[in-house]
Length: 160
Image 1 (tube, one colour):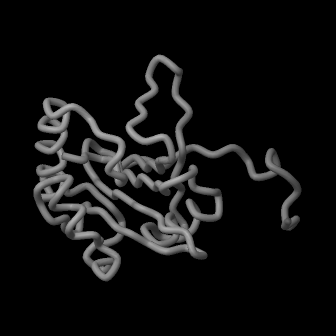
Image 2 (cartoon, rainbow, N blue to C red; image 1 turned 180 degrees about the vertical axis):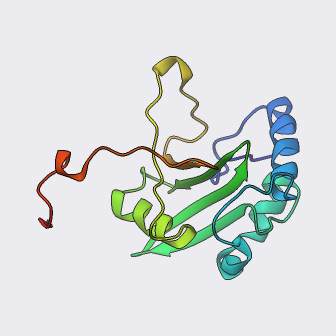
């Protein structure tokens, strides 16, 4: 079974897969309704039903699922889920990590324009890596992500 990993050459042990499949069945079945700001059924034309069934044993719903999107000739594989008070989107390609433009494209597809999502760089002791070319976007439920003042990034109105 290929779990959380869009490309078959990276596989996890069956015992870990079984635990995670149970978690994703609960998420995909909508066990937690805190969620994703967009009804993922709106993205059904992009839904990868065969992947969902093979990897998770269920078809996703408005709270989670697997999607394949083409962006400027690159196939992006996406897993979106909502649970444990977090929204999560993973984005991967077959041969490299997604670019900033690709992540921003996916964020705009799955989220509202005014929402803040983040990537986390956790201590090395907490690293979890199931796929060498996968990046994650996160958004907590029920709280705003703090941001530094825009001037810390650069003067207002200056665009690259």
